[in-house]
Image 1 (cartoon, rainbow, N blue to C red):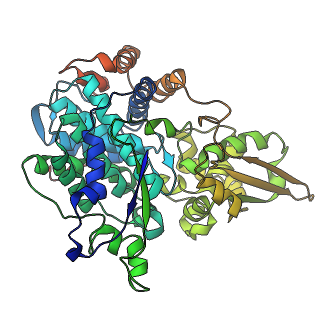
Image 2 (cartoon, helix red, strand yellow):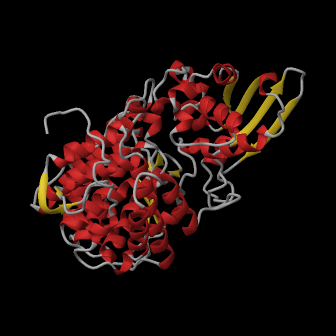
Amino acid sequence: MQTHPVKVYPSKALLKREDQLAWKIAAVAADPVAVPHDTAAMIINRVIDNAAVAIAAINRSAPTSARQMALGHPRPGGATVFGVDPSVRVSPEWAAWANGTAVRELDMHDTFLAADYSHPGDNIPPILAVAQTMKKDGAALMRALATGYEIHIDLVRAICLHEHKVDHIAHLCPAQAAGLGTLLGLDQVTIFQAVQQALHVSVTFRQSRKGEISSWKAFAPAHAGKLAVEAVDRAMRGEGAPSPIYEGEDSVIAWVLSGRTHRYQGDVYEPVYYEVPLPAAGEAKRAILDSYTKEHSAEYQSQALIDLAFRMRDKIKDLEQVEKILLHTSHHTHYVIGTGANDPQKMDPTASRETLDHSIMYIFTVALQDGRWHHVDSYAPERAARSDTVRLWHKMETREDPEWTRRYHSRDPNELAFGGRVEITLKDGTVLVDELAVANAHPLGAKPFGRADYIRKFRILTDGIVDAAEADRFIAAAENLPNLKAGELDQLTVRLPEGKLAVGRPGIF
C-alpha cells in the first residue's frame, strides 16, 4: 500500500491531475490486477449476504416503493430486480436503486469501521446491475467488486465524514464509480472524471441518521449507486467533472470537511488533512478481507453488545432487580447510538424501527430480556412497548471511555474494538461487570463467519419467503460466480413465488 497526502490548493497552483486523489483512485481502478483467491471467496460470501438481507426485507415499505419505481423504467436486456422474475429487466441505475434499498433496509449486511464507517456491500447492487446490462461475465464482476470494496474501505480508513456531519455515502459513490470503471475496462482519464462527478453529487448530511430516523436511511446508499451509474455514463460520453474535487480551493475538503475548520483559523492551504492508503501499481486488492458482516440486524456497534447481553443475562435471576445499566464505550457508539446523541427518540417506545436500530439502550435491553435477536420480532411495536422493557431501557446510559475510543480507531487489527464494558448494578448493591471487544461473528470473534455461516444466514432470512428450490439454485449460482459467462449474471437474483411481492402506494413512475 502507498499513502497519499491530501491537501487543499488554490486554483492558481494548477494542481496536476497526477497529484490529485481522484486520479490516484482511477489508477487503482484501471490496474488490471488479478483477484486473489481469498478476495474472490469473500466476494462470493458477500453476494450471498446481500441477497439474504434483501429478500428478508423485500416486502417492507422502502424496498417495495423502490422496486415499483424501478419497474416504471423497463429496459429490454437491462438488469434484474430482487424478488421479480428475472425475465423482467429495468434500466441499470433503477435496478441499483431498487436492489440497493432492499439490501440496506434491515441494516444487516457487511460493515467496515475506521476513521469513518461504511457498508461496503452497498457497492454490489450498482456494479451487478451494470454488469448484467452490459453482458459482462462473472470474472469481470469480481474484479469490479474488488475495486469497489478497495476504494471504499481505503477512503473510510483515512477520511472522517461523521465529524463534519456528512453522511457516509460520500465515500460510497466514488467507490461505486471506480468499480464500474474496472467493470467496463475504462481508461484512467474516464474513471477520473467519473469519480469526481460521483463525489460532487453525493455529499449529503447526517440528519438522515439523527433524531427521528426515516426510511431514507435505506434509500441513501441506493441513491449513491444510482448517481454513480449516471456519473460513469456521462464520463463515458466525454463529459468532465468539477476538479480537483478533493483538493480544490472550493472543494469538498476545503468547504465541507477538515479544510473548513482551518479556513477561518489560519492558512487553509498549509495542513495535510488526510493520508489516504491505496494499493500500489500491480498490488492486489484485498480490502474486502478487512470488512465483516452482521449476525444481528442492528447498527454494527451493537453487534458485540448484543452478544454480551446474551452472556450477561444468565447472571441475573430477576431483571426487575436491575437498578441501572452503564455502558463504557467508544466516542462513536456513545454519540451516535448511545445517550450521548441526546436524541429523545432513542428512548421512545413509539419510535421507528430505523430509530430503534440506532438505540443501543433499546437493543441491549431487548437482547438482555430475550436472549435472542430477530430482524422482525425484536423491533415489533408491541415488543418495544412492553412496560418491563421500557422500565429497563430507561435505566441504561452510555459514557465515552478514551481507551475504547482509542481501540475503535486503532490500526492494529488485534486491538480493534467495537463493543464496550457493561456495568449492571442490582438493587441489592451487586455490580456485574463484563466486556466484549468484537462480535462473535467478527474475524477475531468467538465464532468468525465462514461460507457455511453466510449460507445459513441466507436460509434463515429467506425461509418462508422463497421456495427451497429457488434458494438452492441461487446459492449454487453464487458459489459458481467466477465461472458465470456473459449473459448469465441474471442468475444472481432471487425470485419470489408468483403473487408474493407486495404492492405499495402509487407515485409518479
